[in-house]
Length: 386
Image 1 (cartoon, rainbow, N blue to C red):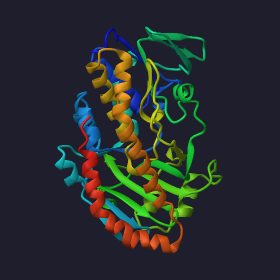
Image 2 (cartoon, rainbow, N blue to C red):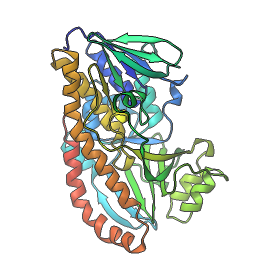
Image 3 (cartoon, rainbow, N blue to C red):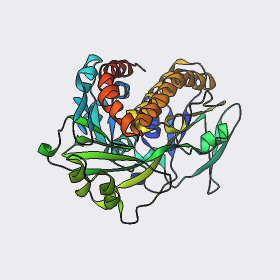
Image 4 (cartoon, rainbow, N blue to C red):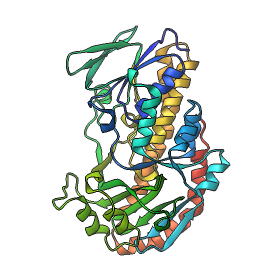
């Protein structure tokens, strides 16, 4: 194990930050997680997400795979459909998953976050702790907070998301790049006969997409993506805004939206950052969205954060000192996450097409032909070993 590493500071208590803290504790390093909000439930907003086989295999290495599988719903197929409901392509997600020895599950983001927080324990988390920067020397690093507090550790992990303070100090980044579309997302109760329980459905329209999937317990997560300038509002409420765009799409789209409590619909502008070759310096590194924020078009954001956590653990175990371990972790992660960031943005761009001609080509040619190639790519993505 990295010599004399006994305490790690983690900035950010999202899925990636909590997974990293759990991994550190597993190898005998005391994690201290700092989160700017005053309640953990405020960290994880939105609907559902997918834990693909690559992340399930990573979770096995910190003894969490079975528990995560237990709170979700197994995915067997991914269907691409038109806004009218016509089937374009059927990707055999379950078969591809089993080829690499794992499953794919849809989960509630809130339940996954709560599970990770429970496993880590509240003793390791410091709430109402807004990090404003850090300093470091040859023997350690000090995190500074807005209320004047300071905390010293052997190394620091910035897992503080898209607008990471740690990343900003390291890289001096500009604003994130806007994807060109906004998402509305939520969870809703829905009877099994109204939507398939083991299918992830992606419906394509002109400059719009609608995605829905089971997350366990009769609940479905849905996401509505629409080309729009950033910073928009819903003056008549989110339900009316979504139904204005998707109200005439094939069922169960309107049913999902109408049955959702408007207070639980979250609107967000989607952004990412171009991949960077520089993640850290000295005893400081980045992890999850702070390191490689990606759009959700291939549903790998949380999964890559989980992979990061396990690779960080392994690097700290294998290398003789902290600085070498952090650079080793970064080298193992940069190429893979850069590829997936670019792929996700490309998939999103195809979903943004508005031209009737281009959309017809996409639906009748591109996505149909994509089925075989996507299955092959999925199996390669899923087969990754941390």
